[in-house]
Image (cartoon, rainbow, N blue to C red; front, side, top):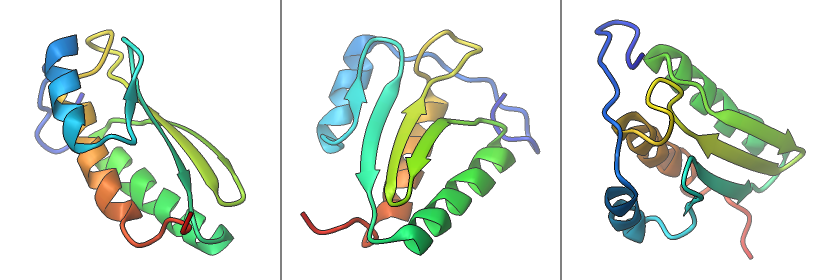
Length: 108
């Protein structure tokens, strides 16, 4: 389910569509079933602020990523169980997450 208020149905995306869309987001990887990305944020507080934004948006949309974190490192995995792969909802959430990360990642 997408969006707890409006109940929008997820639209599955083909591998070709996903690959094309990811050209704009080279840090995200697609393994055939999910989108993944690793983040290294500036510090602990920044990490949890980032995670709280993701958690609130995910809850509102009724679409929850798999999140693994340790101090300032975060691994995100996005997929839509209802369609058995990646959907338009995952892409929308991915774009939103990129906005949340902007200016928060640790300089390399």
